[in-house]
Amino acid sequence: MRIPDGQAQQQPDTTPQAGEGLSRFAPYLINRIARRYNQSVQESVTSMGLTIPKMRVLAALATMGKLTVNELTVVAVAEQSTMSRTLDQMERDALIQRLVSENDSRVRVVVITPAGLTAYHKVWPQMTAAEDALFVGLSPQQREDFLSTLSQILQNIRQNDV
Image 1 (cartoon, rainbow, N blue to C red):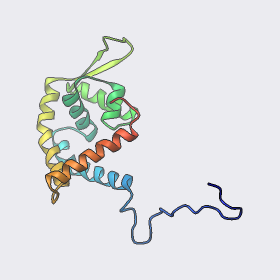
Image 2 (image 1 turned 45 degrees about the vertical axis):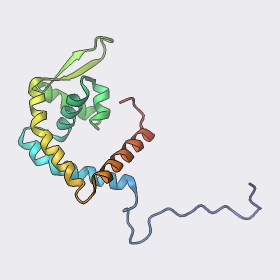
Image 3 (image 1 turned 90 degrees about the vertical axis):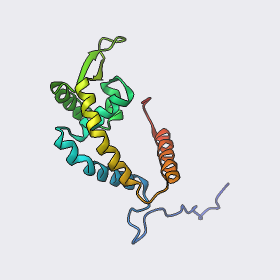
Image 4 (image 1 turned 30 degrees about the vertical axis):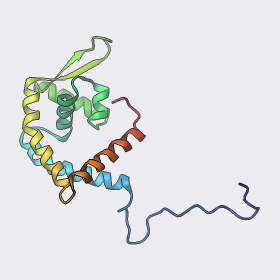
C-alpha cells in the first residue's frame, strides 16, 4: 500500500500512559515477580548455607541430571562469572562434582552429590511454598494456563537447547 506524499503512517502509541506505570509491561512484571519470589525464599535458603544461585543449581541438577557449566548458566539464570564462583563453592562444600565429559575432554559436566541432593530436598518445600504464594486467589486452571503461557513465551525467545 502506498501512502500519499505528505501523509506519514501513524504508529499506535504503546508507551505507558500516566497512572498506568509499567503495570501492563510483561518484562517488568516478570522481573518484579522473580525478585519477590527470590526474597521469599532467601531467608530459608541462607539458613541452610545456600544462596539463590546455589539453590537454582541444585534444582537444575536434581531435576535435569548432569549438565555442562554452560547449560547450568542458562537454566540456573546466572552470569558465567557468577556460575564459576558458585560452582567452586559448591564443589568445596561437596554439593556438586565436576567431571570431564565423556564426549569432549575440554568440557566439564556437573553432577549433584548425595549431600547436594539432601540439601535440595530440604530447600524444595520452601521453594514450592513460595511458588504457591504466587498463585493465591487463582484457580488450578488459571495456574496451569499461566504456566503454559510462560512456557510458550520462553519457547518464543529461547536461544539455547536447554
